[in-house]
Length: 222
Image (cartoon, rainbow, N blue to C red):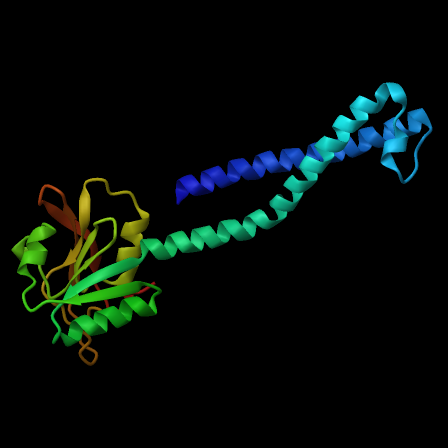
């Protein structure tokens, strides 16, 4: 996404320069018309014989730069559409869960309410899935969510931490985990009860460390 924005800025700068050049061409053409005393509504008649080639080139440049000006006007809308589409792509998850797991469904509802697009696959035994994605037994929970690019989110990880992780650079990480099922975490709400817990970041070599400490119910949300 950041590379796209950088390219967008470059294109915007070039188009802006072309529009400025078009305005300069307009000024030059007008001065040429005055100097040759042939200024009227027909621009071709404004050129003297010995300057006709220069005038033609100026017209061609004006045509190109006016087209660039139109692109400059519509470019921001196109850019925002692409950025929005890219964000939606980043927040798509495939959730592996048990068909009878109620807290998994509640966690899915939590993510959908925060703009995530989710698909689900039901399995009666998720051990093979967790082994495949390198989630050690002490970091496991009831469900496993995976992005198209292969990042894993194990258990009741709040949406705010998933978004933060996906927008950061973690070349050696495979994802995040909330082990077990802490009471009060998204999908595990029980009246007003809450148990502080830690979100762990998992690395490719199997190691892990705290990514965020959640001390209150409110701190789980943006």
